Image 1 (cartoon, rainbow, N blue to C red):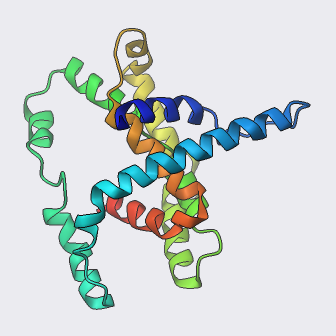
Image 2 (tube, rainbow, N blue to C red; image 1 turned 135 degrees about the horizontal axis):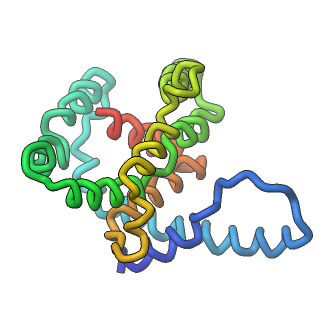
Length: 201
């Protein structure tokens, strides 16, 4: 069920955060957004249920939590997966292109996620996110912006050609869906903060 829901949500999310001018159909757009947000809430709650038991093992005292979180860099899900060694030493160019095509499909724009997450947070986490945002933005240098770097990589490897005959795995879509959903809904603000931190490990 979750794979199908993520595919539906990805289709609705396609241009969700795209800047545009107002139009006469704004009421219809609101109705569509309501549908999107209901589906998004259902998907995120299903995903939260999947990890609830593991999340409950996290310490609740500050020092214990920090130690637990830092340990995720070594022992968290996916860390040091054999896939990465295989990509480094054995993958062909075509296999690497397939992997990057999947990886970039779930790219929700880390800079935008950081910007959305920091809204109305306390000063300390807001400043930490501001430092991260400044880094994502190339420290004011367009050539160093992370988003355009990924776009240049995709163009250099002609990843758009794969869209005609390569199926996206639902897990790629899920990453983008969940990250956007957490950042765009204030009830998940702290979840978004944690997810961004986990990605940065």
